[in-house]
Length: 166
Image: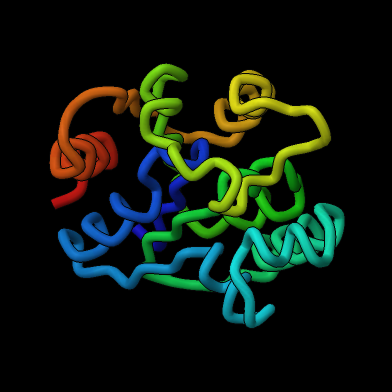
């Protein structure tokens, strides 16, 4: 297996699960949000607020379509699935796993909604975002895992089992 790409809503656990999955499999870990922060020398929310959603979207799309890696677990930003070029590149790098969390669970998890760098459009709610993005996550996923309950360790085990990895 070359890479494992994790997609899903903000707050579904991509970054946390990704680190543990990489450790369990002896792989490297890449978080595309951290690449954006490092390249822009700023936090996601600050980039969105100071430079605008269009600028942020361009940067995120570029990171996804230009990423090259091998033997990595890649956690994407929640909005990465909105950029077809980025997702085609990421799919070419390995298996795409959609970490699917129910809306009530997501709402419970995402407490810092206004400061965590979520790409909301004008007037858009978390529910709107959830409903809109689900089709994109499903479209690009090779594997979908419902993880609305259970521990992070169980989620890691589910991914390993689904990918038939040791």
